[in-house]
Amino acid sequence: MEHLIQEAISIHLEDKKVMRSSHHGFTTVNSSLTNLIAFSDENASWMDKGRAVGIVYLSITKAFNTVSHNVLKGKLRKCGLDECTVRWIDNCLNG
Image 1 (tube, one colour):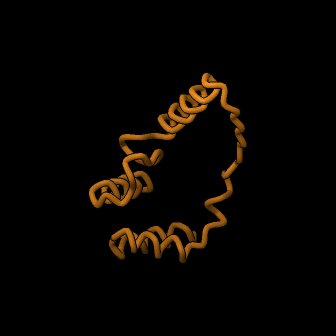
Image 2: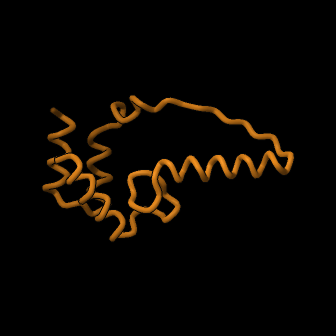
C-alpha cells in the first residue's frame, strides 16, 4: 500500500510541476544515485581545478521522525494532494 501511495504522490508532484527538474530522490527521473553521481562529479571537477573541497556527512535517518506531522500535512495539501490521501498518510504516521 505504501508503494502505491508513494507512486501516486510522485506522479501528482511531477504532473503539477511541484518539484524542480534538478530534484533528486523519490522521482522517476532522478534518484538518490544520480544525486550521488552529480555530487561526486562536481567535487572531482573542483579538485581538478585545485579548489579546496570540504565535505560533511550527516546521518538523517531519524530526521523524518522529528518532522511535525501537522506541518507535513499542510505542505501536502498545499501541493494539491487530495484530502483522502492526506488523511491516509496522517493515519499511517499516527499508527
